[in-house]
Length: 86
Image (cartoon, rainbow, N blue to C red; front, side):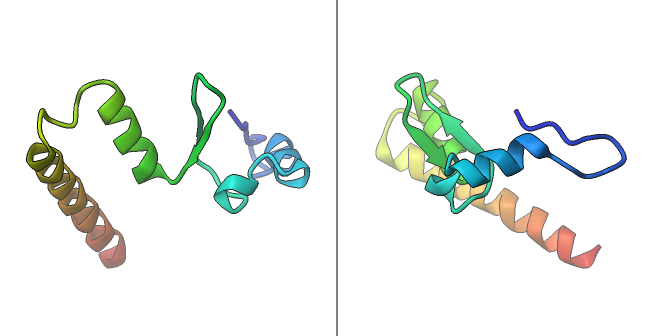
């Protein structure tokens, strides 16, 4: 949604959204998901879980949902560890 001008790392639309308060819900950061009803959801993991539940990808019970969360968190741990190693 916010384009970065090639070669400049400048994103005027993003800066405008910060200035107008459009990103206040998420501490002036992205990503943000604006739902069909106009609600704003911030934080990538919250967005992932919202969409997974909405599209039937969070299992058929609370235990399955927790197991899916567990796998997702393991993936994040592996990704974070790889990023620290460089």
